[in-house]
Amino acid sequence: MTGNAARTVTIGDAAALRALVGAEPLVSDWLTVDQASVDRFAEATGDHQWIHVDPERARRESPFGGPVAHGFMTLSLIPALLGKTVLLEQRMGLNYGLNRVRFTSPVLVGSQLRARFAVIFVEDVDNAGAQVVWHVTLEQQGSERPACVAEFITRHYF
Image 1 (cartoon, rainbow, N blue to C red):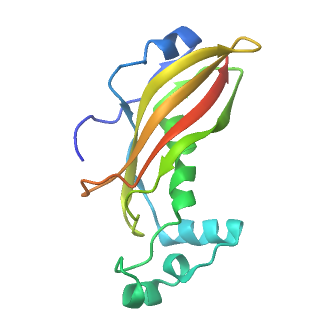
Image 2: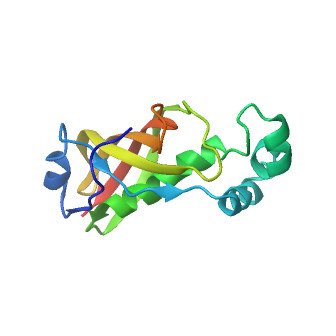
């Protein structure tokens, strides 16, 4: 997948978020998924399956030809990539949840990922907040298939 250079957008209010509905997706910089990060994620979650943490065995026995990142690790990169792509001048922001999530392609250790963030919907919520539904596509450099596609929901208080 190609196209769209990374750029950072600054958002200072709900109106600026609403202006992104239907606009071109915002694209993050590339991020390398390394073995040390996969190992730390395994330690934090207790998921030590060999396809993630045993590179030699994964090269020998895995259908992927090497170790792969946990699907939930890939998913957990979304907030950090959003934070580096959209600078929100807000009092507080939080992750509200996810709708549909699909892991559509394995992420081999050493791969580069980037995210495309498209605003689907913005609605007002209590205490002068705005809830945003983002369509997120995590792309893997050199692959036509995305690694993950999700609807990510955030709340922002300006």
